[in-house]
Picture 1 (spheres, rainbow, N blue to C red):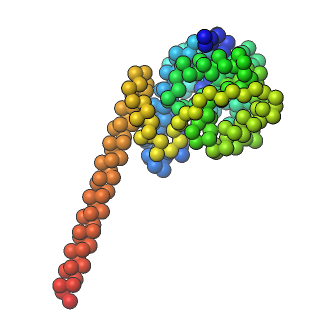
Picture 2: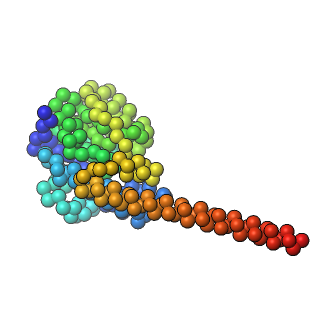
Picture 3: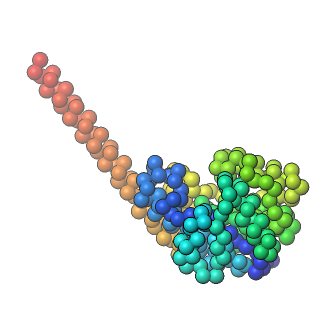
Length: 252
């Protein structure tokens, strides 16, 4: 039976929506990217609220502490990130949490709303027999990563690439840590991922997931309308060009 204790921490690495998911801005625009990031954040907060152990918010910058305190999770601890790249930040946060007595630390972001408390609880419970648990992302990254004894140095790993999961597992195994993989999950990194996400959320009854699914449905409908308008405009342009060509031919 999956067991999570008080000092088993679920840690959310996060940032304000207007600064999140910036790789989607060229496809979605700044406003819609921030809206999507806000709804993805709500899904992760929903998981933190249902976590039976300790919840920790790890906002990206020291100045984000006030923002994190206003997210509505009064029982969550707040530990602002420090350091350079994501690997350095993870090492720093993990060491600080270990010093505070957290026995297991499971890290998530906002990229995988298909996760939930049952799958995360199973991941934490797997740390009773493994030193590291990893949830593989379909694009080669990870959607969660957890440890009991601690991480090896992570700064030099290929973060935000399709080689991350393999490199992370390799670094852990080279340090003598027992690694266990738990599933393979889709995440949200590209606009092309949104249609599949909307379909996968399907009949998910969790409130934040319903709101995300509805938002995705509206935005995908808008994009379909935009494409139809573009095709109509292209068709009109072609007709006008043909008419102009015909008029020139008649005048010769």
